[in-house]
Image (cartoon, rainbow, N blue to C red):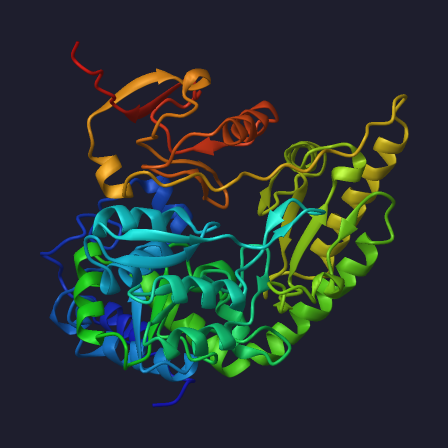
Length: 490
């Protein structure tokens, strides 16, 4: 088959044109039973292919027809042996990777700055995380990737690990030397699992970091919807045969996937793959040029800094994706959260994320000079407004959380007897729930870790500036779940 073909999308259109009488779900029956206002907005075309896995349309849980053809084309496009479509987002694909290689009590080597889905999979599987410290960028206040040396050291100490998980690229677009990491892990016969949520496009342009499949990784969970043009919640899981069982991967993914799979999401994966495979280089080339021009213009603005190639050269910053604009605003005396709100209220601009020191803007195939001009103009206005302050604000102190000691496996802690105590008085106790800043969902605490004063302070600072801290049952984080302690009987 040709990469110009879209067997899944074309098959859905053919079925919709037949206009069969539907005595099956979904109950809106091609839109006839849905709210009219919503129908008018969404349109009859979309509703006509919002279908279910009836015979002619194949079944994602056991594909043999149009879905299999679409997945096979995707595997060829991404250089994988097998590609699975995910309607559970990349989170579902990441959880599948972890659970496909790890069982109760088995070790997996992971960087600390993993997405919360990795930690969820570790709880579900009963695996034991062996954390690697990611390299910290003190100037920007962010974590980068892991180094080849840290992977080598972790495998020397834990040769019985069932997998090494790598983020490539990070949320901020930074890549480590993935090819070397894969070589090291494979020398121990350990598979490499890649969280490629922010790297669907890198496979299709030579000026971008190596993709997971190009680097020889065993599995990669890739968000096509984030930067590749498919609909939100649609992702893929790429697999290479050898150290992992493809059949086992399919079984785990099926366990985690709804049986009511969305054909709108699946079709969007099919057409996104076609566009990337046939026009990706040309479209990404234009996107890179646009991002670089924005970066240059931002760096002409006083007290605002947009990261470029100068960030490369450390052990963990082997390569970077220029379409990610990391914009440091701490020299304005503002938090990233302040700037996010200002841009929203003053210029109707929404950014990808903000943290204590930065905002992140992503430039994709869908951006043009028009949006670029709006962003640069807004940032110029912000710098001008800050320059008229009566009092100059000192640049913010950069804070980053430490990795606490793991006293219990996450699964044991998650299911243990717990009690609720005041957050302010929890130092030294073993936490029984997750605490993370989202986005990007990096854990500050995971179940089983000992609560430290430094991490409590870091959480407090995030709360003070209004950044969302997620995970705990208490939204305001006044109280927290910890492992129950039993006093000795006198």
